Length: 281
Image 1 (cartoon, rainbow, N blue to C red):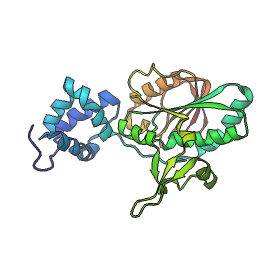
Image 2: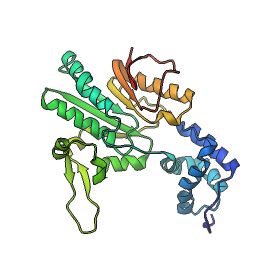
Image 3: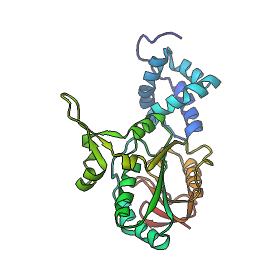
Image 4: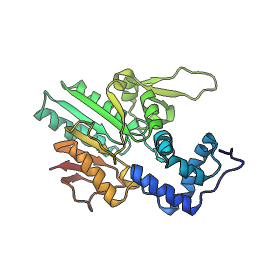
């Protein structure tokens, strides 16, 4: 394989090959408007692999060896991972004010189970853990959090649980003091925080591709977060993914989706409680 002399251009034909392959493997629907973005994100992979053209990269990643060795890195490059602590706070308000008190009144000896199904770099499941820990301060309460993503790169960051100081702007001061650790000041270093061990031990991370078989995960979750991932799927894939998720949600459990997403056009066994909040029926 020849080393790259200069950045390569992604032809329409190679974009078509890659976009169809990406759709098949992870359900992400890349329109022609995403061509430049895909070219930019995969350029580094060509350089790292010393592959001279996108055409050669297509041949490689779609080969049996490429599917085995390169596919996971391509998905890491393609996946968009934007998240924040306490993002879309209405969901966490609903948990505190309605869902958890009602659940605890009906099942005080049970284990409250949450799945963050597209957890990215971990801010979402660690926010969930803060809310559940706070509830547990005033109630005898057990819980379990499973967090998954398709990208191994962001899962490694989530497990490490180290974030820039500015990322905690939306975290209440009392929670910062209780659950976050500040980095020791080093000259020239940007200050960071780390999620404390109490929360880190409460989150179990898994790599899961939501369009593949998900039989290896529990089927009795009380709450599933699937936020800001449906926007990358077409309608058929959205319905397929949501039906899989709902098969893992107990009857009466809740599904949270992102505020830029909708399920109104889909045939699903849920009824809307609030915008972006649904209950399985």
